[in-house]
Image (cartoon, rainbow, N blue to C red; front, side, top):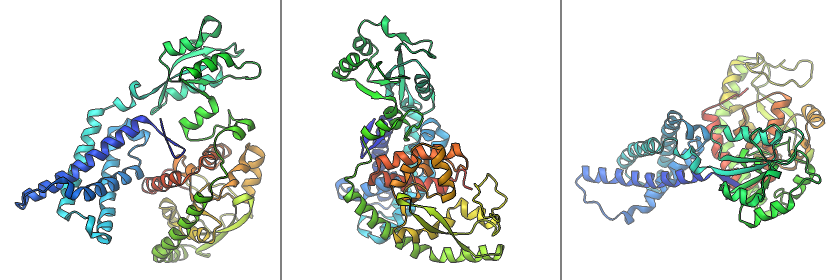
Length: 462
């Protein structure tokens, strides 16, 4: 894996992205040549139109990232990848048309764009047909040796078998666990030199998955392995990297304290984030004001009660604030005055409410909270005080999610479908802690792009 701005990118995805970029440049050039040949124009040097080609390729590839072309599902299924590619190219061309209107100097002819679109889809699909399952094969997976044979090691075994896993476990070493559950694990006593054993298995990483670490850490073995150039990781760090979330079952306070992350040196990033929030929320409120008014009118016509409603939420450092949303439920949805989790096919949701929830239109008035500084565009979703009180009692480290400003969209929202239970909140908390721990402008940009996928392909919206 390659680490970019605190975010890990699998080698296979990085390689595929580079191939795609080259093919998109080639597709843009093919489109230009085809149109030039059609009108009898002699083609000039490619260097003369390199800025246009790069602009075309980068914008189409950005749309591909936004709709999930590089996600695990798209890497595993050709049919899934083709569907997402078609959507991405269409969105990219719409964005290009707008950009060409603003900056005519970097534009193709519109006829060039048509040919380039067709060539792009053809080349990108052909690349995925040729590669097949190569990108998900053992050749691109890191070879891992697990020290441990208990339940924690079993979790790594299950994770390695999941579709899209970026690693393969090539060996287990039992370290005198009382509750051994990996039958194929080799006992440490049966291995003369553990560093030589790891090298023999051609492993690039060793993961420490001991159930009890007190007086059982093989320090000499780990030192020798480390000095041979093999990475050594504790299971919590490994799971964080592989799953994109902080695993609550394996972390402890000392890991959170001493691991990388939660950096206070974020002054530049914080200023940049706030400036972006102000500019983006102002623009979005201006552009969507007619849509908000129309939706408010429809809400008002369908059911009695106000079109907008205020709801108390918990924000940065546990401070309360009022969030404004378009009403999507009946006015008496919580008649007793008690907060109630939303359910699947919740009968309290109106017909208009179901539509605006699917399209996230009900979230648009929250841009006012972003403009005021109570929220950000990206961050953990703010919860209601009643839920927060319960969750802080039942989930460890829940209060730590309030160390960053809440957001309209977030790492949990793009990675986990909507849930309304303690277990769902636990899963979402793991993603929220990952975001709080690894925040960077790059991660914010990635989340904003992936939010397009969530809007276009809504999963579990309630």
